[in-house]
Image (cartoon, rainbow, N blue to C red; front, top):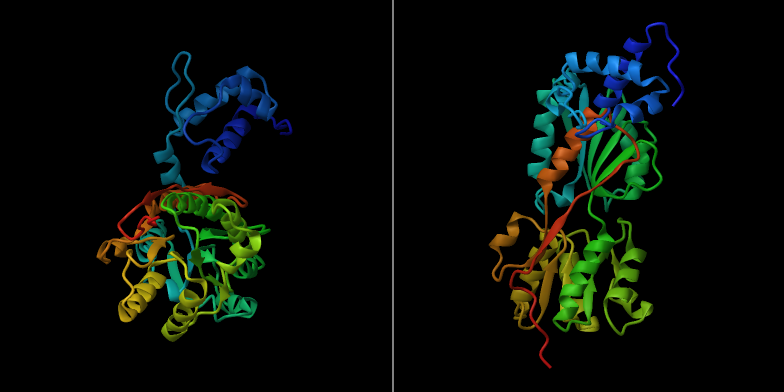
Length: 357
């Protein structure tokens, strides 16, 4: 960093440190004086004097011997609050009852309004809307939007919003090659690796995953299947992940009827609760028993998993963690290009049976 060249060097340095603190440059502890002096190109004495001012402003805990100064995150959050402008929330209409998105959106909206801002929520069918650019422009026309919160957006939607120049926080989805976006979520490749290790340990080799054409990552899933299922080729893996356009209940019914008959899977991986409801309903109508005749695993689970009998195996994600990351992103001044990895745990449930023989 270039040396600060002002007459009141101590004050300018204190302002620079406070600015970096409010951007979230450091999360809990401030680096030592030597490292700070090197970062800002000043002497250790000047740095020490500036830190006293920063401490008096309430951003730092008092200094103690042989210990780094603690950062007062509560004070930073308070000073960052104010008139936050408008938050535009974008979600998939078809996912409305699929996951825990309502809870997440409520918490994000409450946080934003408590800062003095307003929230506008738009829902769109990612699978039906082929050209998002015009629709996105309509959302922003005549509106002053400070940032956007997007639930699991496909890359073409993310790019369309990125072109508007508004900071975007992605709750899942694909950040791609964007300039203004940051992402909080899990890696699908890692999730599939964990799921496939579980189902293959029970003997499953014919695993079905339907892939909506509107979403990214099909090739990555094929690679994960080829790597994670013993004894299959990449061509066989690709056949297990058909690319589809499923827009209504009848589409799903026809798909299950065709795919289960032609591929004869022993286990089906489902994206979300909506697909789970579709498969369970289809199987009930056809006399297919889960898990005795067909095993099922839901990738993006939700609280609805508790309502299924038997309970469906699924991945459980920490949505509270993603809200905390959104708050950090806002309080840090909407930094671009950040990826926040969130964890998950595998809930085995009772819907994946061991293959006999």
